Length: 201
Image (cartoon, rainbow, N blue to C red; front, side, top):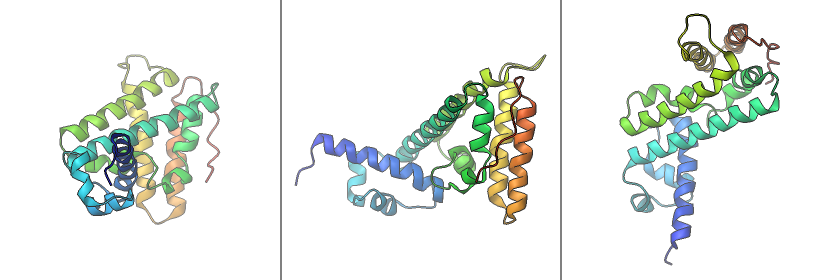
């Protein structure tokens, strides 16, 4: 049966969505095209009708994952407009987020992999990271003498690093301590302050 143009585009978007999750779970090189396409309910033969290469899919899936992550930050911030940074810290530096291997932050899940990818994947990550920084800026202000982005960069580095380290250890208590320490450090730098995160699971 001939696939309509609309169905082909829907299939393509499904593949991008599925790849954005499976890459976060397995890494760019940890899953092959056959399994990626199977995850989308399609055959491997359909891949090259939709994408130029696996690198092309990796770049598009990275953009999709980072857009989703930015959306989650925005939703958290809207849930507590009086303390948006505290709200983002509450969800991002939580044990629940650490457990989200397929839906969690792509910078944590794929950052080291992205460093070994081509320009298109790196561009997707650069744009996503810039989006994080642009959101952080108004929430934290700037310290005297700091360039506008320096404080936001330091806070983002702290948050990403804490989730990465939290995922890397077996000891659940140590895992949570990384998150709590990072949350306290980040919120201490906020000019509007904010209550410590609830540490929800």
